[in-house]
Image 1 (cartoon, helix red, strand yellow):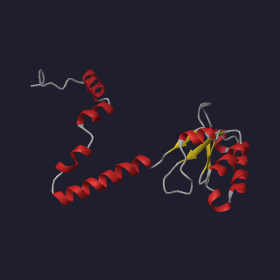
Image 2: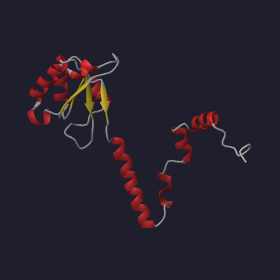
Image 3: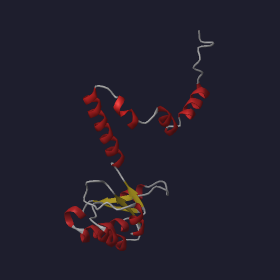
Image 4: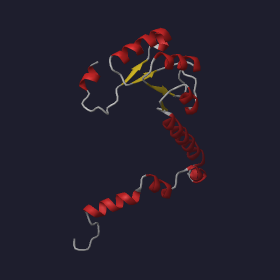
Length: 157
């Protein structure tokens, strides 16, 4: 209720999370969810729903937006975005998926460098400078920098 009352922007979404399912079970989780909705929550984040049946029961219990957390090695069965959409979920998050992918690649690469004494055997697994610059839109930074400061030495001797 406090978050809803404090909201200053009508476009600000109030997401209420509950971790009750892992400890108290689905029925008590649904009771909490209903209280959150009554308090004005726009979206519900029910953590640790176990399988499709629990995701479906949660959808039937509330009409507000629902968020599904697809974190690996957690309590929830990993479902596809399409499956979750078909179950009526509006948002899916993968909170540490990219971190796990990146760190596994870093770990594997460092082991190879340690073993070989050089990085030549992992170059093909690396992102190229060209691709990095494309992703971060490096050209735009150059344009912006040039618009506020001239980095040439001319006139600054």
